[in-house]
Image (cartoon, rainbow, N blue to C red):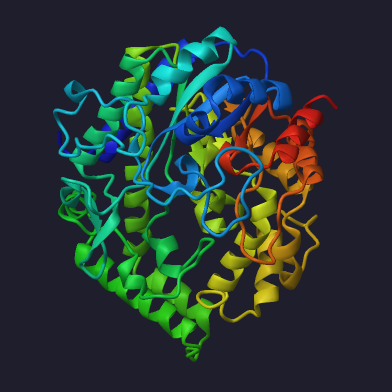
Length: 489
């Protein structure tokens, strides 16, 4: 299968949108979901975990981490954090990741990425084991899979993105037909092999522009040439089909990376950072054209997954984990137009993690204050971000932000913004609520009142449900119970 052209992508999203309108399920009771990995059921027992979910937090939907090579949603906990008050009291040092359900080979004929079965918990198919018990309790079950891989997987080298510096990245290229074939294979495997209620896929990535300028939490201090992607053969071929001059795109990004490098080295251009940055965009419109090319590839993955899942089972719910970077970077937020998601979504889990949001926003501010906003002091950049993102209610200064986090009002505002962005669409907004997501030393830790306030803020904002995040294995039980108490008023 060749890569998607703009015309093919348009046809695909229109078809998916028509299918959605025809097949969308009628809204029922609020969905109270929780993200959980295999390790929690193995540590504590399936019945014990499900009992706790229902009794402590009124959970009626499981978002089970079925595929990931990252520790964030599937491992036991993050190294260096205080141990939770449940489950095994040890760190998952041998975590490998992969598919925690059974991988059925017949669905993977058209992708080179076949050997994905996780070796971590052999003989434990988390969906096969948990689904019947969840059904008996009238709890919905979702396969929760994410766009995180390892470099040492057999066949991965043919799927990886290529950086501006010519290196292979750990991320996969959305314009590579083999990558699209893999996501179709995994989706078909889940939709046909298990009577699950839904699928949720997440891709915590941004395009070359955001990576070049370090516009995310975690930012970047290294050579930005090594994080600007993708310039593989598939992307260059797609670019040429759109009339984009590949040589000028490379040249523009090379100069943008040089400007970023000067900023991090505090070598201020004579016209300042922002003017120099804007001049580059004028001189090289190919910079944003390449950004759009990358974003279109990611969107085509959403549309592919949705269309395939609905063709197999029209009643299955399909939705997306929307990366926290929408809360920090206005550049990333601009690319996440919720109105577009109406064509290929039943629900959106928009990340609204207010506790870890403080340290993450501070990290973003400190990064971009060294690049395109280098004309401003970091505190001024925070004020600019508060205004652009409509966070005028946030009062924490930059030196307070990491310790205080973002307020519950942020959760309410972001819930209202997401609902408004869908323009009365029947798509459900299920805010992602932060419970003990790890932060650094001397940074904001979750307390029961934080959870209580965030849950009630989401409800005030009009949410018809929520997803308790990031994973049960790192949640303290008092904080989990606070979610249930908030739901009861």
